Amino acid sequence: MVNRKVMGQIFSHLLLIFFSALFALPLFWLISTSLKPNSEIFIFPPRWIPSQPFWGHYRTAIEFIPFFRYLFNTLYICALSVVGSVVSCSLVAYGFSRIEWPERDALFMVLIATMMIPFAVTMIPLFIIFNRLRWINTFRPLIVPTYFAPAFYVFLLRQFFMTIPFELSDAARIDGASEFYIYRRIILPLAKPALAVVALFQFIGSWNDFLGPLIYLRSTEKYTLALGLQQFRSALLTEWGGLMAASTLVTLPIIVLFFFTQRTFIQGISLTGLKG
Image (cartoon, rainbow, N blue to C red; front, top):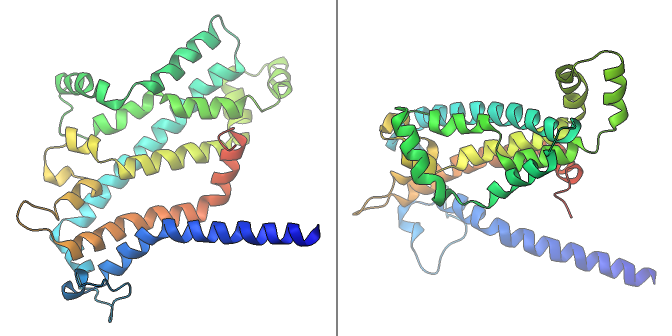
């Protein structure tokens, strides 16, 4: 019985290692190609490890586009979007989870139903609205919507807030605390793992967003990194070495961020009910 259990654990670990290596293969190929000279990128059979690391593509990636300008634009959008999502969604989730009011659950179901509406359906109406507001070619269409409580994050935070004992809120109300005081001084400190998940999801979403900047931004000086990568491609030529190097530079911050926040992230996922 013990041997069967040990063999099962060994098999499970081998299976996990296999699939981990399989999913890491594209990232390895991306980094490997970024370090290859142009003569080795398209050779056949392909060479997995460059004969000698060539760092010139990273210089090309930084000089071919205004990389640091695009990096600043991306971080600016990400930072304000994270603040908007965390603040607005936590407030709305508190109202749906900790305060009793008529038709609360029915309205929450309507909010959840909006998650089924694809972006393609709302893309043109949103563009018309932002155009009339004269927000086209500004960062506002990419930032302001996050201050109106995206439904998925509201659902995630509501699930977590429901697990916090209601006795804490009741005791605070008896002592004369307002709802905002309870939200700010009791609920938010206990909800740090869930708030971290929302912040991480929003940061990654804004960092990787391509369609939004493509629709709303016209001036190249306002481009984000996701749009900047597209400039390595043209109808006549694609700078593959520079593109791979730039893609590596864009991808690595997300990997590093997840590496340092994975414990909080996994804890928040498990506590909000998204983990089966």
